[in-house]
Amino acid sequence: MKREQLPYPEDLRVFLTVLRKHSFVEAAAELGQSPAYVSKRIKVLEQTVKAKLLHRSTRQIALTDEGEKMQHRAALILGDLHDMVSELSQAKTSPKGLIRICSTFGFGRIHVAPAVSRMAQSYPQMEFHLELFDRPVDIIRDEFDLEIRIGDDLPEQYISTKLLDNHRILCASPAYLAERGTPEVLSDLRTHNCLLIKERSDPFDAWHLTSKGKTQSVKVNGTMSSNFGEIVTGWALDGHGIMLRSQWDIQKALDEGDLVHVLPDYVQNAPVWGVYPTRRSLSAKLKVCLEFLENHFRAAHIG
Image (cartoon, rainbow, N blue to C red; front, side):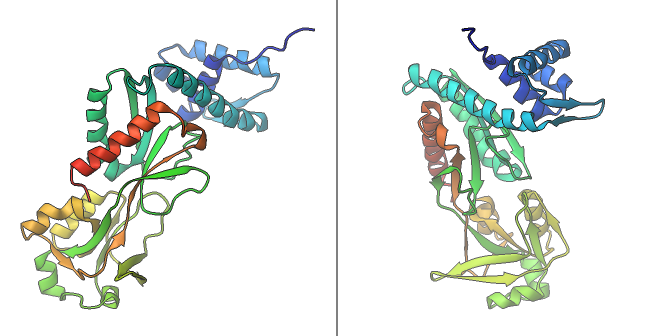
């Protein structure tokens, strides 16, 4: 009996890279190969599985029905191969291999990127890739090993490990409060200009705040919003309104009197989580990464 030919892992890697980059040319650049090489590997893969996987035009690449099935399976297969190599190597003491991490723009740039820098110094045999987004990410489809998220809106299909407790507080500049008055109860926020941060697809027209173990919601309005927390902090410092911001990001401004803590009995819980696929839970390099991030954030007194 003739043995059935199976896809090469390299062809699966090329296929997933094309999907992630939405381009044969850009995929080739990332892989360090020519576009002709990428086209050949996709053709070989389609011949191997006896199915057309991609619709390709001059402007875009789209998956066929068979391609959608292959995308999910290919990500699982490559992930399992990486984990096997990691677990069979001297992974616990000297982990090797690439770990792909994603996070939001603000937290990723300010806090995750420096942590990854220090982690790379501690584990020189590991490779790190960090991408920042302002949209929802499917970590399996987009081939990430770990997502760093803030808040308790967590995807149920993945495992989530808490890296740090954190909370957000309300604050405004002295100039704004002198002009508009200081809120005395939560409902007063409805009459103020609230500076809104919108990351990904989260709704941002209501703030959920906790006081003495009880959570309340207040509908807020404002004339200024951004998907980048540092921009909103700048607006608050300029006297434009009240913002809800993680305390670690504004502690210096509070200490120097540039911002005033408003309604101090209220906080918004926003812990930092590491989110990863179930099949990655035994990965030694992931365990090393989670432990390092947890220790780094605590040592930096974040939160």
